[in-house]
Length: 111
Image 1 (cartoon, rainbow, N blue to C red):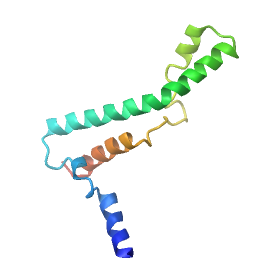
Image 2 (cartoon, rainbow, N blue to C red):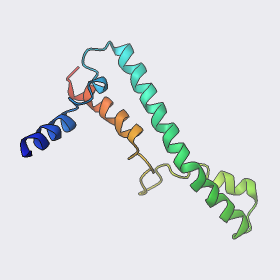
Image 3 (cartoon, helix red, strand yellow):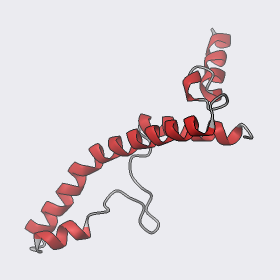
């Protein structure tokens, strides 16, 4: 049982369980296109999570703080992105992890 778990762990950390993520045999154009597709999927997934939170901040700005709606929309337009010491939100989503692993697999291949 422990040998099975260890093997599964090794497959997971090396990416052997998901060969489609590796860029080792792809042309530079294929890698760039796949990376762009994965990055776009990450951004879409993040936006789906961030949008309701951003809207709640805008609503609070308008209702509680009694600010102009256009001001509140401008002020919170980058909600969820990196700001100062605050990290960007939701880069831990599966789509973003996949994009990061793909990028890392190419960088670590030495190509």
